[in-house]
Image 1 (tube, one colour):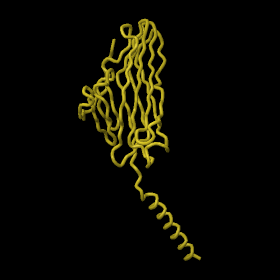
Image 2 (tube, rainbow, N blue to C red; image 1 turned 30 degrees about the vertical axis):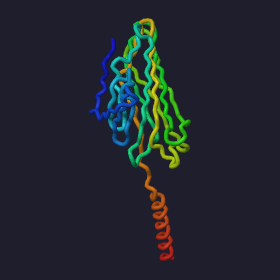
Image 3 (tube, rainbow, N blue to C red; image 1 turned 60 degrees about the vertical axis):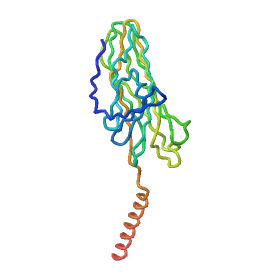
Image 4 (spheres, helix red, strand yellow; image 1 turned 120 degrees about the vertical axis):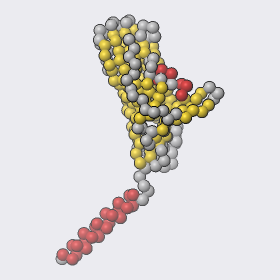
Amino acid sequence: MHINTKTALAVWGLTGALMAGTASAATLSGNNVSFSFDNTALGLFGSASVVGDSLVFAPTNFIADSTTPNATQTVNITVTADPGYFLSAFNLAEQGGYNLDSGMAYLQGNFSALDIEGNTSLSVASNIVGPAFVAGTSGSWQGGAALVLPASGWGGADGLVTSVSLTINNYLFATGGGQIWKQAVAIEAVAAPIPEADTPLMMLAGLGLVGLMAARRARLAA
């Protein structure tokens, strides 16, 4: 039996616009980043909202069973940091349930990020890792993946990554009396303030001043 999502959704901040005739572009703003995607292409991921700097999906029919042994969905998202911030990492968390009267079930997937500011051939990826399911059992499951953006080579001339394209490929499989479903998916964007250009100079100046004062005290004490 499919369990409805328990995820608490935040208030929608959705802006729609027509693209390519039938596609609908949506942008949701978080604390320090914004998420843009095709609202009509979410499919099994259901509806979307933002909590903090996390994009949260609430699947309603992402389930694999004897009727639909293979349930697959791919979603593409553009993440853009607010002015004064840059992106450093992404965390993907998923949860759902399963019921194996018999047969088998499993989940697979891939989470990737593409540099769209500088060299668009640069990407990082991670497999979505979930638990092993034992026949004759039922319960809940959690899975996830993490991406850390390279410290150099990304982000164009300034080397600061402020916009990337994310792709989530999700796959559920069940057969022989098994059933597995996805209840919630959340993508957390890790953003940090861009350092002020004069911060290193100020630190050096401060250290120099401390050194001069120490030398002066040493001379006076001599």
